Length: 530
Image (cartoon, rainbow, N blue to C red; front, side):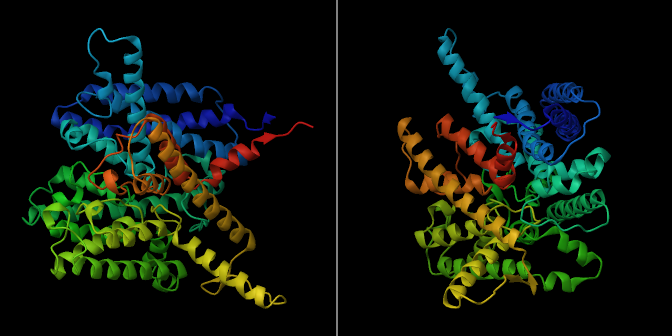
C-alpha cells in the first residue's frame, strides 16, 4: 500500500492555519493583561504557535491541493488546533486537575513522573479537543475552575467559538489560496449533508456565514450585559457576558462558572434559550431572512421538523417535571407543581441538549428516569444541517424515516417508483446513500465505543454504570458534552482511564467532522499494489 496524498502541501497549509490560530490568542492575552494573570502563558503560547506554523509553511511555499489533500487538510487542521490549544493548559497548570499530575512528590520514581506527565497531557488535550469541537465535556471540576485564571478560562470559551462555524470556513473567508478548493473544504468540514452556496464565490459564502455567526454572538453578549446593567443579572458582568456569548452560538456549553447557567438569574436563562435555538438552525436560512425571503425559512422541511421536535420535547419534559419527576430544587429539581419553573427548565434543557449545547440550569443527572429518557431521546436528534449543532442532524432523520417508509411501500408495491422528497424536492439517491452510511457508522461507532469504555474502565478498576458508559460515548461522538450519572452537567470526565479519554478525544474529532471525511481520507489515500 502507498499513500496518495501530497503531505508537504497539506502540512504547509496546516501550518498556515496554526499561524493564524496564534492571532486569536490575542483575546485571552488581553484578558491576561487586564487581570494581571498568566500573561507569560499566552506570550509563550503565541510564539510557539507562530514558530510551528511558519516552520510547517516552509515545507511547500506554493502548495497546490486536490480532493485528497483537502480531506487531509480539514482532518489534520482540527488535530493541530487541538494540540495548539493544549499548550496554555499545560503552561498554566498550577493547581488544576487538567495538569495536576505534574505535581508529584520530590524523589518520586521515574515511572511516577512519566505517568504524571502522561495524565497531564491527555487531560489537557481532552479539554482542548472538547473546546474546538464544541463538545463541552470537561475534565475540570469545581475546584479547578476556581483556580484557573480569567485568561485561561476565556481561551477555553474562545476555542468553542472558533470551532463552532468552523476553522477551515474562517480560513477560506480570509485566505485566497484556500478559496480555490473552498467548496470541497467546506463540504468536508461543515456539519450536515448539504452545503448551500449563498453567493457566486465560495469565499463570499464563508464570509456571509461568519458575519451572521458573529452578529448573533455580539447580540447575545450585549443582551446579557444589558441585563446586568438593568440589575436583573447581578453576576452577569462583562467578562461573563463575553464568555457565554463565545460558547452559546457554537453550541459549546463551556462556562467559567462551575454551576453553568444555574449560577445566573432566571432572566439570563430565558435570554439564552432563543440563542441556543438559533444556533441549531441552518445559518443559510438567516441569509434568506435578511434578504426579505422569509418564505424560504418557513417552507424549509428541516426547519419545520426542527421547530416541531423542539415543541414536542419541551411539552413532554414540562409535563414530566410539573408532575414531580425531579427531586427538590436544592438537589437538582425544579419545584414540583410550579408551572413557571417547570416550563423554564424544560425549555432550557431541551434547547440545550437537542442541538448539543450542553448548558444546564439544574442537575438533570439526578432527575427521575422518565425525565432522563426524554433528554436522552432529544440528544439523539441533533441540530440542523448548516448549523453549529452536533448530533445526527434533523435532515438525516427525515431522510432515514422516509427511506424506511419507501422501503416498506416498495416491498408491498414492487413496480412502484418512489423517490424521497423533502420540501417538494427529490433527494438525490447519492445523498440518500450517504446519509444512510453516515447514520449506520454513527450508531455502530457509538455502540462499539460504549462497550470499549465499559471494558476499559473495568480493566483499570474504575466502576461505572452502563448508563455512564453509554452517555459518555453518545456525548462525545455527538459533541453534546454532559451525560448522566457522574457525567452530569456539573460533573467531570476526569475519573476515566487515559485510554478511554483518548478514545473519547477521537470520538469528538470524528463527531465534529461527521466521521466520513476522516475515514474517507484513509480509504481514498491508500491504494493496493497489484
